[in-house]
Length: 489
Image (tube, rainbow, N blue to C red; front, side, top):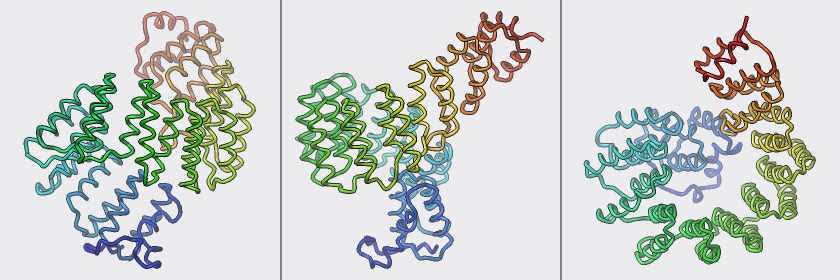
């Protein structure tokens, strides 16, 4: 692929039909948006000799990042370097962020260190700061922010917003007002995100009147236009405070702000009206969404069906599901899972199983969440062997992001207590074989329960001490005493 260093900044939509068909991002997504297909297409593009403008690479990187396709985005960014395409300081900041997302923070730090001093601007510093904040690395984030101030870098609201979001996530909302005051003192203009984080911080300490003062200040400021996200944030705060009347008035304002018919805004409206218990408004907004988006996305149906289930409108959820099922181009197991979960919760096991099989026939195999639903049901009804089967199925499938799935500590404890109560050594050992596929260490609590199970069953095993040593575990005194009778030659 010949990467052109300079090219006219021109919209793809204004090019000839022939070029649009060959545009870089269209070539990458021509077989769908899955990471596997995008990677395959990218490999083909990189082997070709098609000329691509720098701005088009940047536009494609933006689309890949929006879809969370970070690995192919990094590969494309690295190709820019290899083919001699000049990177701006913004390009380098994006590259640093991609390294952090696909590799780790130390790799991103090394990239930053190796940058020329002239490239170490507020862009690259800000990107590294944002990485620290996303990983909740408070000390490193605070130290880097102080260094940025010491270097007199031109600071915008972005690094402050990153730091405030970090404090929100780590349970320190009380630190946020001081940062707001620092921004004001330094003539750093607050943006919509700044105001939203500030409002959330005040809500976290139950200062609803303070939240309302912030929204009033934002309106008086005039430099920051309050978009629909601001009103979504405010409505959510009112909902969480149980102030439903104020929440619904705010949702009315949200609708007025959604002049561009943003899909996400409609979905927030449906969710928040659902939380106020206003089923009539939920259906009204749903009709508006359908009019605005005749080809309604799977995620919109998923959201609507979930809200109807939460409002105990199971007939409405079933009707919405049937409508989706008759129209969908891709049968999404996540949508089916919402209704499967509703059936299981209502004790309608046969309907839940029937829907699971129906989804399978349509090409949507059960995922880990599907088996979690049945797992919870079987634990509730005391059908423990079926629950273990669900754990085995979920473990073998894994998570949608490619990671391992493992049951919660509570589920593991419940199952181990069952085996102990039933004196079922074989059942316990079989469960641990499944568990070992998804966890690095079984843990001392699991082994202590296993030892008690052997003891109450009157069973012995000469290898128990060796197993504990292999796992590097030290059991308590009570378990040590039981070991004397369990671990015999």
